[in-house]
Length: 200
Image (tube, rainbow, N blue to C red; front, side, top):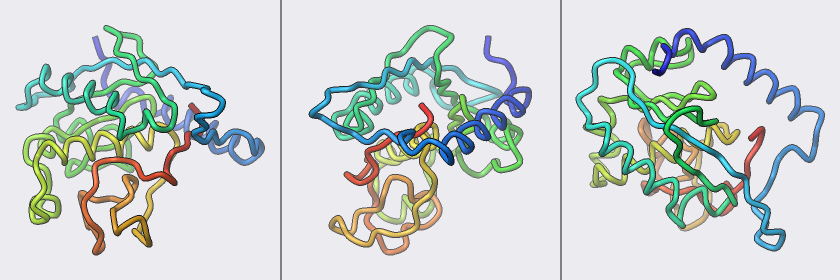
């Protein structure tokens, strides 16, 4: 059974610190997609819920599986995700807003959040997206794909990006599209220059 996200805060902060230290001393620590080498990063994940949710957990599980295996997604960064019943390296959690906020001082009850090894998808956002995304005329499915890829991007070592300077004006997946598209077009998939991992 999944333990409370709050109890994992210390472990998550330690993991984050280890990543930052290693990144500062190891120039090779950033792995870019290289189809020539064929090197694949294998990541196991499990799916669970936390708190009282209104979303359907099986639907969540299915969209997670489809998104993580989609050829437009992080697969292009040579990452292969495999679902396991429990004990995955990555924990995909559909969480009540209060549970998301309790995960870390950097999280809120308004959005989703990643506190490694957890990706906590806010149940309210899962069910209704955000005004920004809805006003852009996007589907709920594309919002779900976007938020899953965005938060998984954090798990893979990415920070936020703030602009869409080129690439046909598509928003980078690591832009906070839930909050503001900044004149970019909504986009649920990582762009070519986002296809790298750190600390995985």
